[in-house]
Length: 337
Ligand code: SF4
Image (cartoon, rainbow, N blue to C red; front, side, top):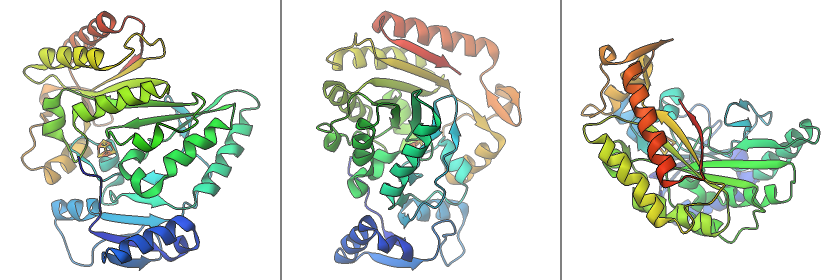
């Protein structure tokens, strides 16, 4: 797939004090793209009135560049100790993206230019661990690989962690753009997890992201480059041919990896879920969605959140766990939720 190229750039004036801000301004001015100067990356929107669908599409075609002010990292349990945010949101349009739901109208991809300051703050948070390993999640607020060709920030972050014996970085992605990361000296301190699903799911619901074949090819390259590797299969959806779909997904993965028996391989399993708020937004943004959003067909977990009924959840869990153990007996299944 093609890498993201925005229709317009909105850039904070303060971001121009940083090399990455200057570089992005120059690049897009040279390309004669519309460049607008803004005061804050937090309050951005079109001048004209738009429907929720138009607003969503406008936002996903807009790149916002700013300076990250909050350098006190939030907790990211259970995935890691802290969230490490160098970008927010992404240009993809996955129908069930939880970020799209949480960010509301602010779903525009954002790049923060003060990467050196952010990495300095990493050091401060590692010190708080008092000698214990401290973990950071790079994908809690975005998919950093979607804009890495514009930022180079993930590469710098991985290099930084290679110098930090007590720091560990975790990355999740639905994109296959890993080529500039393969020769990085990572010291095994960055773990990549590829978010995968049967091609049917990716085609129908994960618009603007890499295909399954691209993600698996990228995962194989990452493994060859000796990074620790894992997979997040999420959301697990019980569509009519789901058993065949997930079976094929796992056997293809096994065939394409050079070392499917790598003891560091891991799987994280997350069943399909939606909230009342997500349902409202998905129906407004994707009026022809094939997602099943009838609350009556699901188990209400409380707080407006819905998952599969208990018997279906059990069937899904045991099917996935058995197939993973068959194909990847050495791998760890970290959790099913
Ligand atoms: S790739 Fe990830 S962050 Fe981007 S839209 Fe899809 S789920 Fe959201």
